[in-house]
Image 1 (cartoon, rainbow, N blue to C red):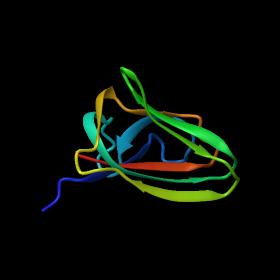
Image 2 (tube, rainbow, N blue to C red):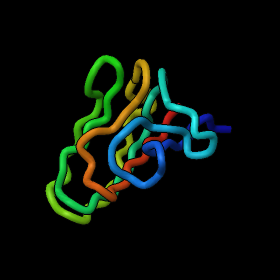
Image 3 (tube, rainbow, N blue to C red):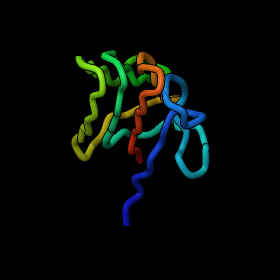
Image 4 (cartoon, one colour):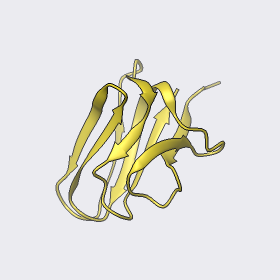
Length: 98
């Protein structure tokens, strides 16, 4: 059984902010990101960060871009609350964590 869960930016409408669990709405903190997925409506550089700074920087060079990025089984360690900056309005960004 897997302990991987999905999170989205609070409010679910897209854009920037803190990540919350998609089921429980609990703020995501002190975890490891295993996969991230996004769909953006405009070219942008999205930055996933924690209390120590940027952990992931991903540039979408064109409008209407969709992608999934798989990270090694170790994942990317995040300390403190996990947040997103730089996403286009209406763009969606999901992390799979645990």
